[in-house]
Image (cartoon, rainbow, N blue to C red; front, side, top):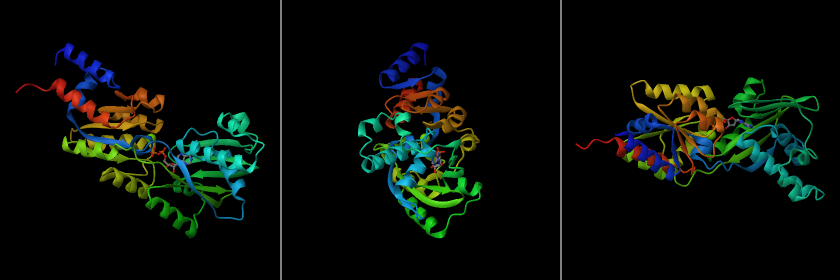
Length: 314
Ligand code: ADP
Ligand code: MG
């Protein structure tokens, strides 16, 4: 391809909301064999919403939600946002003196009217959050977070969790003072185009793989909806880059599509990193492509554009 052809293709991409950072990235996309998709925010809409709350102790429902929301208020994770939103709704109905408008300013000062004071907040990427409330430790996250902190998950809680996960939901465990007190079930619907894109890539000779920090059961249930057979779940952020490298071993060109901070090492390690435009700045920086429309069809657009630009007339 001539420099002019590359310039034209980059312009065509830009006009279609596909930003390409340079001619090398444009060229590499033609030979992509594997596309690794992050789950949350990439294959899914990133519209995580709380769909169920189950308290496993005597604790009052409202108090439980306040505890969880207080622990999550300092986190940037989509799950935290979903929990905060749900708790805000709940407390609006419980306390009419707090107006709906004031809650939706997402103003921390307003929220602190009902949130508990916390100390020693700490986010554990790929696991959850931890802090102290009333001198006691609260943990909000997945099984591995609780295992790491030595909290056991009783059988009835585990059964509830498995049921959520088999239905493509994520169960968030809550432990207070080393006791499992409840579960928050979160659902994040698949993007409408996900399955069509996976199918389209397959027809182009490109295989799709899901790589996620979420648990195996949820990951498999979501992958099934998208038509993805190859799943790598419970992968820690640094591990996503290792998964990329394992696919590169035989010399294959590997693309990563992701949106999160936790995807940035993998986006950098991939031959072609594609960031979702609505994703975090760190992901966008690490990527070669930015898909501004947040539409997975643009993965196909990007490969097509590269193939057309670099194909030789035989
Ligand atoms: P993904 O790879 O799907 O984007 P992450 O690596 O961000 O997922 O997180 C993996 C898992 O860790 C989540 O599914 C959740 O169970 C848990 N987790 C991470 N952050 C939080 C948080 N702020 N609150 C609760 N759980 C969390
Ligand atoms: Mg994500």
